Amino acid sequence: MINFQYLRTTTAKSAIALLLKDKNSKFIAGGTNLIDLMKRGVTAPDKLIDINHVPLKNIEQVGNNIIIGALASNTAVAENALIKDKLPLLAMALNAGASAQLRNVATVGGNMMQRTRCGYFYDTEMPCNKRTPGSGCGAIGGFNRMHAIFGTSENCIAVHPSDMCIALIALDTTVVLANAKGERKILFKDFHRLAGDTPQLDNNLKPDEMIIRLEIPVNNLSKNSHYTKVRDRASYAFALISVAVGLEIVNNKITDVRLAMGGVAHKPWRLTESENFLKGKEATLENFEQAAKLAMKDAKGFGENDFKLKMAPNSIIEALTVAKSKA
Amino acid sequence: MQSSDKKQNQGDSRRDFLKKSSLITAIALTPSVAVKAAESQADERFAELFEKIPLNLTVNNKPYTTSIEPRVTLLDYLREELHLTGTKKGCDHGQCGACTVHVDGERVNSCLSLAVMNEGKKVTTIEGLANGEELHPMQAAFIKHDGFQCGYCTPGQIMSAVACVNEGHTGSRAEISEYMSGNICRCGAYPNIVDAIVEVSKGGVKA
Image (tube, rainbow over all chains, first blue to last red; front, top):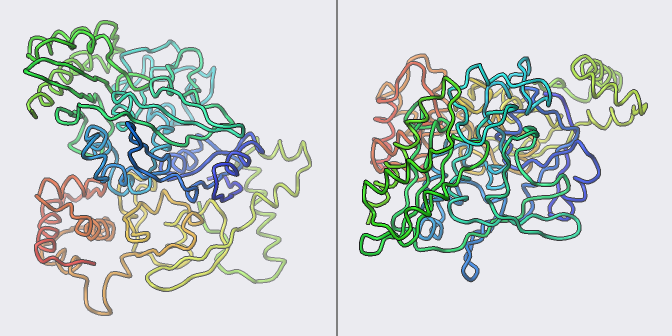
C-alpha cells in the first residue's frame, strides 16, 4: 500500500474543511472496501481523514421518519430493535451482506460508497473505464457472469454491490448531505448513477460533500417484507440477483408495494412499472408473474450473464410469494 | 505492506536512512506522486507523508505505545511488531477471516483495519483467550470436537466463535453457520466447528 497522510477529526464541519484542503483526500470510516482498494493499487489517496469519531451513529424515530446516522455500523442498524420492528426489510438486507466481522465495522455511509466488485475494476493490469476512463471495458466480451442486465452502457456493465442499498431504495429513503455551506437532501434513488459516459462516477455526491444521515419514512410494509438473495454459496458472497419486497395487503388486495433489485445494474434498481401494475390488484401468483415480466422488459444479457434473464424474474416471483406468505 | 521500523530510537542516522529509503521505494512504486513532489519540490511534503503516527492501544490486557506508519494494518502491527503470530494472514483482503480479532469486544478482520484507527482501543487476540495454562472453553471444545485439520484458520475461527456465542447467534446450527460464514476453512472442518460452538453455547460459557 502506498503511504498517505492520516488525520483524525471529531466533527462533520472539520471533516469537510479537511476534505476541501486536498483534492486527493478521502474519508475513511470502516475502511473495509477502501483499504482493500488501496492494497490492490486501485486507488491511492494522498490523505485519509478518519471520521469514525464524528458523532453520527444515532438511530431514532423523529416524527414520521426513522433517522440513521451515516456512521452507524451495519451491525448496529441490523440489530436495532426499532429497525427490526419498523423496517425489517433493511435488517434482512444488511444481514444478507458481508460477514459478521465486516458488518461490525462497515458503516451505512461507507456501504453506500462501496465500489463495484467487477474483477476488471480490481485488476490494475486490465482495461476498465471506471478505474481508468478511456481504457476500455474488459467485461464486455470478457468474464461477465456477475454483470449488469439493466441500464448498461458501452463503457461499463459493472453492478452496484450493496444489499443494504437495495432495501433503502425500496423504502423511499432520503439522503442528507452536507458541505461547508450547509445541508441538502437528495432522494436515495437519485444518489447512485448509471454508468453512461462517466463510469468513473458511482454517485452524485459532490467532491466537497459528506453523507450525514438517512431519513426513512415509516410505512405499513413491515409485516410482508422480504429480501431474497441468490448467490454462488449459501452465505458471504455478492448477489447474482437480489430482490427487496415490501407489501401491504388488505383482504388479499395489494394496497402498497415496493420492489427493487440488486446485482442487475450500476445502481440499485427500483421496479416502478411492476409496482404500478401490482397496486390495487390481488396478491396472486398470476399477478406476480405479470409483474416480473414487466420488470424484465428492457433487460439485456452479455453472454455469461444471460442466465440472469431467467433468474431475475424467478427471483421476483419468489420474493413476492414469500413476502405474501408472511401475512 | 510492512512495518519497516521494528526497533526505534536507534539514532538519527537510522531514522534518516529509513526515511530516505522509504522515499526511494515510494518513487519506484508511485511515479505520479514522485513527479508531483518533484514539480513542487515538496521535500517537506514527503517528510510529512511518511511521518509516523503515535499509537496507544491495549492488546491482551497489556498497554502498548508505539509510533507507526498509517498504512500498517492492525494485522501487520500484531504480527510484525508485537510478534503475536497467532493471528493469521490468509487472504489479506477480508475474504477468509483468518485474521479475526476482537476490538473493544467485537470481532473484526484485522487485515482491513489500519492500526492507527484503533487508538485507545482494547484488542484481544487468540493469545489472550486462555487463562494461563487453562484453555478458554471454546479452545477446549475445538480440540474435543476436532474442529480443525491443518489449523491455519483455527485462531480466526475460535475468535469468531467466541464472539458468535457472546452475540447470541447460536439459536440453531443454521444460525451458527450463517454467523460463522466470514471464516473459511479449506479443510472443511465446518460440521465439527459447529459442534464445538453448540457445546459452548449450551454450557452458557462467556469469554
